Every structure is written in C-alpha cells, then in structure tokens.
Length: 329
Image 1 (cartoon, rainbow, N blue to C red):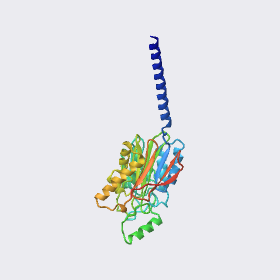
Image 2: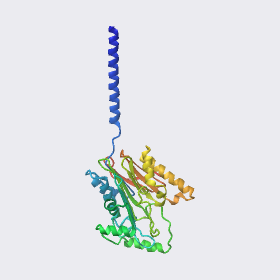
Image 3: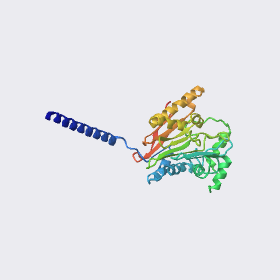
C-alpha cells in the first residue's frame, strides 16, 4: 500500500512540473511575439516625407489617426510646386483644375468630393461631407457650393506654371500619360494611432489634361482608399481606371483579412490588375499602379506594377524615410 501512495504522489508532482513548464513556455512565447508597432503612418511618393512629418505631429501626441491623415495630406495640397495635388495641380483639357479626395475613419464613416474646383484643400471638404451631411459624396458645382457654405475660401488653383504647360500641350493635344509622378499622381496616406485605430485619406488633381468630368480612383471608397479597423488600411496610386476596375484597395484589405502580409496582399492585387490588362490586350508598360498598406499589427508593405514608385514610412520604430516599392515588371 505504501508503494502505491508513493507512486500517486510522484505522478502528481510530475504533472505539476509539466504544467508549470508548459505555462512558462506559453508565457515565453507570448513575450517573444512581435508587439504591435504603433503609431505608424505611410504615404505615397516623395512628398509623403513632408506629409508624414505633419501627420506625426498629431500621432506623437496621442492624436486620432483621422486628424493625422487630414493634416498630412494637406501639406502637398497646399504646395503650388506639387503639380499633381491641390493648388498647382495640372488642369483638364479645358484648362480647369478639378480636384478629387476622400477620407475614411475607424468607424467606416466616409466622405468624398469629386470634380471640385477653386478649393485648395478638398480633403477637408471631404471630411465635412462625412461629418456634416447625410451623404458620402458630393461632386462638381454641388461640392463647391457646399464647401463655400462651410466657410472654405474660393481661389484660383491654376498657377502660371501649370497654365504654361497646358498651353504647350494644346499645340499637339496628345494624351499619353506617363507611368509615374511626372504627369499625374496622388497623395494617399493611411495611419494607425496610439490607440490602435486606423484611418486614411487620398487626394489628387487627377490625370493631367484629362477629359472634362473625368474622375479616377482617388475619391472612390474601395478603389483609391479603404479602411477596416479590424484588419488594415490601404490606399492606391497610379492609373485610376485600372484600380477602380479591380476595387483595388478593398481587394488588398480582403487579402490581408485572409492572413496575407501587407506586401504580399499588395503584390497579389497588382498581379490581378496585370492579368486584366493582358486580357484586354493592353501593354502593361503603359500603366503604373501601386498600393501601400498597413495591418493591425502595424506591419506595412507596398507593391507596384513597374519600377519608379516609392512611399514614405514613419513610426515609433522607423524614422521618417522614403522606400522604393518592389514591382512586378
């Protein structure tokens, strides 16, 4: 009988040691997991460096991601030397500068404007649409009337430099957009704040010398921008028609939902666009599409169709810097 009691005691002690060891191992794994990198902000193209710096002033003070992305993209919007966003943007074929923008927060609140004239900061008008109207998008004259009713100032957006380029273009009226930022492009920005919430903004003057009334992907939620606070945030740049065709930013978010790293998700979406171009007998070398993304872990990534696209990253772990995106071609 004594040996049986000793056996039971020894078995119980062994189980206790095993349980303790397992608990310690699980605790060790939890400690070694990569912590969420927040806050973080990423944005498209070289002007993303200055835009990120403005956004970081909000994020570093525990501000909301929504406020950060609005503050960030307003920097290139207000710079007359940036020829693809806001003031100084290249005009359409009639010499009119028309702007597109959208914004989205962690609660899936959205606001958008398209073909908006005379207002330097369309992103702020988009936010006003989100917060002060029952709608999600206003366009053209209606967007302008709303902006003026909210106190925005009417200004001439056509700078002498852009006007001179337009008049030179009229001599041939050849419409063949270049693939990178020289001809057109977008400031897209997505951010995660210290509370782990996501928001995004996207703003552009669109393709230079576009047809009157043309709207690209930038003001289209799900195309130029999409935020899912449970998964991640994405914005796009490049030829908007191709991004719209694939609901590009929403596609990237859904790929991240399936577990793909942001870079892999961006790459997969770009490859789908490439397949679409080939099916329609389009030369991929005539197009550029790029995506940037962050997930809820604070991981970031980007991918583009062909070389030449870069993006800026700023986080508590990464000093504000410009990175070259990987490409398919």
